[in-house]
Image 1 (cartoon, rainbow, N blue to C red):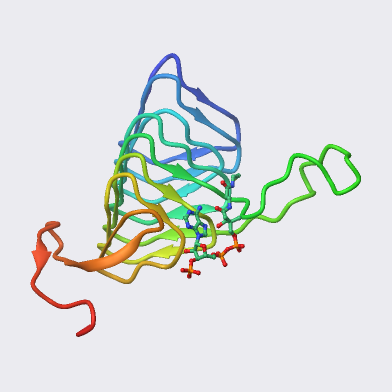
Image 2: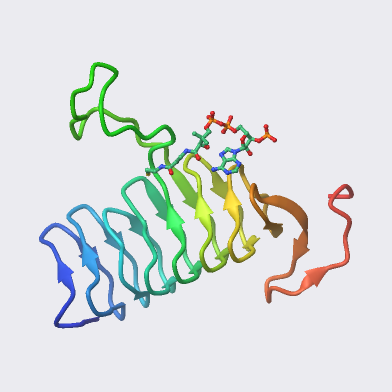
Length: 171
Ligand SMILES: CC(C)(COP(=O)(O)OP(=O)(O)OC[C@H]1O[C@@H](n2cnc3c(N)ncnc32)[C@H](O)[C@@H]1OP(=O)(O)O)[C@@H](O)C(=O)NCCC(=O)NCCS
C-alpha cells in the first residue's frame, strides 16, 4: 500500500494491500477500497473493489459501489442525490439527514469515459463502456457501449474494449 504524504485517509477508512492513494486524495470514514487499486483525487465514502483505476479529479461519493477491475476516467462525476436542493420548501438549510441517497453500481470490468456524469440510481453492467463526456441516466447493459447526453446505447464491446459487430436490437 502507498499513501502519498498529501493524501488524507481518515480513520475508519479501509484500504487494501497494494493500493496506491495519490496526492491530495481524501478518503473518508466508511470508504472501503480493495487491493491493487490506484486512486486519484476526489474520492470519498465509497466502496471500491480490487484492481480499480480511478483517474485524477474524479468525484465519487457515498452510495457508489465500484466492482473489481473498473476504469474511471479523469473528471468523471458520480452523483448520489437525484433531486438535489440546498434548502427545504420553507427555506431552511437542509441537514445531512434531509436527503435520499440513490445508489449507483458499476460492475466488473466496466469503463467510465473521461468527463462523464453518472446520474445516480443506475447500474453500469459488466465490461460496459461509457463514452467520454456522456451523461448516463439509465442502466447500461453488460458489454453495452453508450455515448452522448443523455447517453444512448450504440453498440456492444468486447472485454478489450473493441466493438462487436452486433446490432443493438439483436441482443
Ligand atoms: C434532471 C433530473 C432532476 C431528472 O430527474 P427525473 O425527473 O427523475 O427524471 P427521469 O430519471 O425520469 O428522466 C426523464 C428523462 O430525462 C432524461 N434525463 C434525466 N436526467 C438527465 C440529465 N441530467 N441530462 C440529460 N437527460 C436527462 C432521462 O434520460 C429521461 O429521458 P427519456 O424520457 O427519454 O427516457 C435528474 O436526472 C438529474 O440530473 N438530477 C441531478 C443530479 C445531480 O446533479 N445531483 C447533484 C448532487 S449529488
